[in-house]
Length: 339
Image (cartoon, rainbow, N blue to C red; front, side):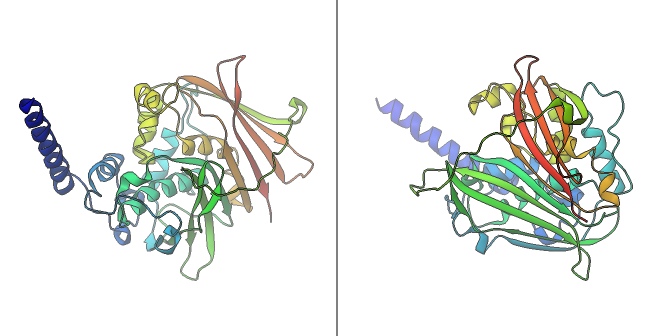
């Protein structure tokens, strides 16, 4: 029996030593003020090391209710390079697409700005006085955006980011992270919002009415696309997104978290939805929101349809995912021109 106790003690000592070594040797110390471009943000490998080892000496539980009081960022001189835009365009290409997505390269796409916003979330979490593992279980419910004018590659701007007060929702806490790009005078280029859910039992009563799902007619379809994804696509998008969430990396990791396999990044889906509108955003103001309903399991094919509405300036977008004949609604978006 004593040998078992000794084995456990040595194993525990080795585990503690492993995490202490990882903390000092592998975990980066993110400095938000120096991250003035996507190239200076944490890579997905650095973010993974930060999550695993970065907060071992920090408070283990994140105070989600009061996180908005300390989660504020201001980065002057932020810019996107032309290479950033080129790399994003290449990573957005689906397996069945013979050509690169037809998105403009003389502006920073809204889809890429949203992707960088999510990447910034990892850096912000690492800068807080909490253990990063406290963010486990946070899922993306959707994105929202509002663009007033285009930002060109190489053009410097000010990045402001903050978190709205946390709300109580079904299944947990509703968390909203906002990022704004503006010029020196404070005039906005683009505003993006990441709508997140931290799944916990809070015991609060949440009022909410069930809404009737909107019906869509093929007679109203203005544009349709089909996207095929395989296991190589998440890896290709990983360097651009900087998102080390294991549910994207491998089928076994996806199954470990209760999914049928690994799933496609929400930022990739949003980018594909936006690629039809990116050119229009150069000359007009647009706003929109996308809600994720079902995961885009890999490998499979998604079908995206853009529908006209009663408002000539507003469009509904529906992404259906899964095998042919068994597809279900994976995401729904509404995009509106408001100038």
